[in-house]
Length: 386
Image 1 (spheres, rainbow, N blue to C red):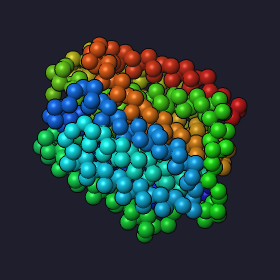
Image 2: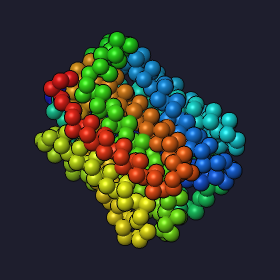
Image 3: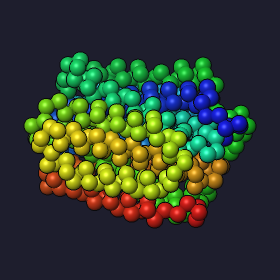
């Protein structure tokens, strides 16, 4: 960790900028489901393709977390960015199920290397007692693209049919972290001699009850979030909502405000209670979404979901930081992100099946039930048993 308790160091700022750039690419996939529909793919196939990058990340990121440490993180960042960009270019030319799955799997592998490297470096910049503020800000800057990209695509008049060209530009964006990695200084020099945690460290982590509960809660959180993100446009069309892309703009703005003003508050109050309350709020919103045929209710739910997500996401990372031994913080944050990738795979995949079988009502009822289970797991977490 950094000395003197200073959070806003050049390394912390540079790392957050790189998180934002990578998120710009993932946020471009808001119309991906509609694009796959134009290619003639079924709901089930589209769900698998959407979630394929997260499946690859789920496999690759924990493995990378066992190998990576501050001395090698920059090399992982550069290599991962090259793979990420190549996969996006491949996806821009793919039209069938098999090539699209292959490109998305490769995309997930590259993305996971980039994120694992950034996480390994960023935990070295966080001083003790400021985990809530640090992860509040880190998650805030990564949200900016989600607030801008969906409506920007609408404003620019970029139709789903043109998404292949969008992916080609995204491949160039994916290369930008390489320049920052080459020309910026990041990480803690003293930590650069640390050895990778290895399998023994990973097993110790997952055997810890608080860490296991946090991993499950994050899996449920991001599974529901991914289902909303990728299927919201179709829900809006079904309900007759105009400009449904504004939903995520409102939600993301509220998430940003919650993190902007809540960071110091997170560190002064009970993180567990705040996070559990957030899960309950999100579950209630999921239940109501399929019935929000009036625009005022539809967009009001965006505000409340944004508040819930905005509180939960940084708090889960801050709680993981707090319960982890210093030597395991990088590994455990990457395991937490692996659960995020698992959620982004399972969420769209299961949602595609549920949508075909039960419609939007069954889909979001299942999301609400899973989120309530996460709230119970979060409430049962005991930091002192870590």
